[in-house]
Length: 429
Ligand code: 0T9
Picture 1: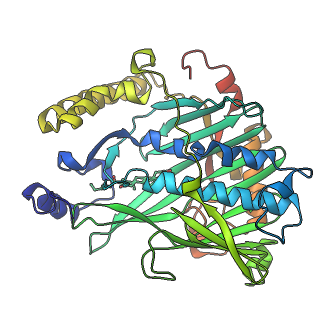
Picture 2 (picture 1 turned 90 degrees about the vertical axis):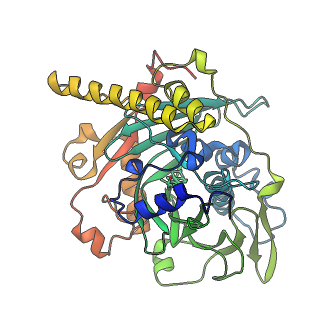
Picture 3 (picture 1 turned 30 degrees about the vertical axis):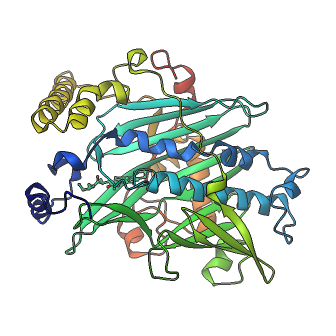
């Protein structure tokens, strides 16, 4: 429970939630629960554990045995790579979902990115054979909010790209339920992986101390056929601990669907340690506290472009830090009015906002219009097919044999256009 839980402003905020319309940005919340950070920064966490990320591309026939010496039964580089993808993925979960609530902190309402907002940076990897990694995040849509992202390391020939859109609703008990649409795709030296985004919920609203818990399942489908099914639970489900998970690696999705025998089972806490069943022996798989997070380098605000997140939101962020309600709404209104003016002007001139580094591809049309086909979209289609997952615009990780899939009519996905980034003149990392 935080000191804010019993304040008038919090209880009237909770009351206002009962008439929630689905648009979180429209909720006006007391200043203590406002974050000075834009949601466009959140996708950086895909790259925080650089060493674990690059390992996915570095594992090969010659070196694979050196990666998990504690697991005796490993016999191929493919299996080793699948373990590496899971290990990296679990580390990203810790960053994405607990980095704001550590050390007594709680989840706050992030700034709602404007259309065309970008957040960029790099991870400098000074050791040889690592090279720098570029990070790009772009708000590709405002209604509904959609953030697209890319993490690129040329030296190791690895790239991650994806996008996320959230759909949220409050339950009667004031639990905020969030479904994510979108995915992430890794392309590493000819191997690709489709990663679905888990459903989440926010607990602790009544005590003014919200935190995220993951729920249900997500998948990691590899181009080699193997697939991870990861099941999530919080306190007191299949273990007494928060942030629990159980992941099964299957040789392919058919075996998974038939609940056949998994190649490996890993379980534990995604925010902490986990173990793997090696034959009949349980050995340590990963302990995230042993790995170094690598923070993203972002240019100082003075050197940033007007579309860059921290520069654009600077005045608002300062007002939030001061806790000054009036100043917060003044500075926010200024930004939002400017955005509205831009949209009106575009409408009058019959123009559309041009997305920068990502384009939206309709998978159904792409089949008949080959020039619409992006490489990532081809990968998405192929990986979704292997996994039995739907490619339509329904919550990430939904299967293709579901009611939701049958009902849905569109299949548009955001795809990274590398050339647009290579030709970028205005925004530097
Ligand atoms: C993609 C991530 C996502 C975004 C956030 C639900 C949430 C917005 C979406 C899903 C990232 O890769 C991972 C992490 C945390 C998610 C956020 C947690 C959160 O609280 C917000 C929502 C929109 C709120 O701000 C609710 C307001 C609440 C704190 C009461 C005022």
